Length: 178
Image (cartoon, rainbow, N blue to C red; front, side, top):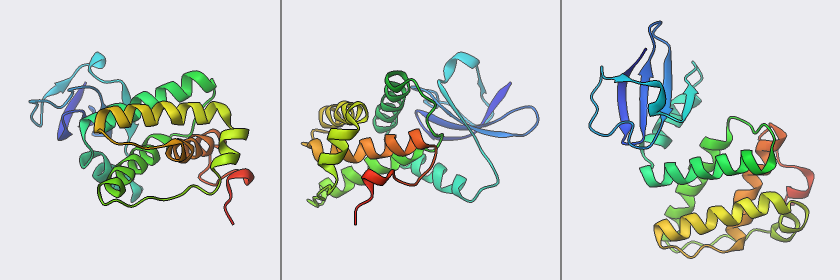
């Protein structure tokens, strides 16, 4: 049985099990109107992150807690689509890296900061499947947040997916910008 320890936002909760192990659960509306101590049923969530004594867990909690439920849902959709289309095991870090990237991209856009992707052509050409997922991500974000991100941003998102396929945070050789 899982009990809520802390509601991070309407789509994310920190829970504990009967052994006091902590988990982060994601699910549409999972935290809405809930209080610490409430029981979470198995069908109420669609992703689970196991908390660890790693200092990055605090960063993960902060990133999720400060992200909109809409952005969390878009990130979940992108990761699910990437897993399904690529039919491969993707690194567990993809979700957090992508959420953090999208959040930062929206913040940059609000400030009018544009960053050019110097390996756009290489990603589009050599990693076409990942690039298509990046294009889907751009469409979802543009629609949800009324932005106008281009294929340059699709390539940035694709780079995160490529890294997740590697199971590492290092970029493949074609992605290394000199």
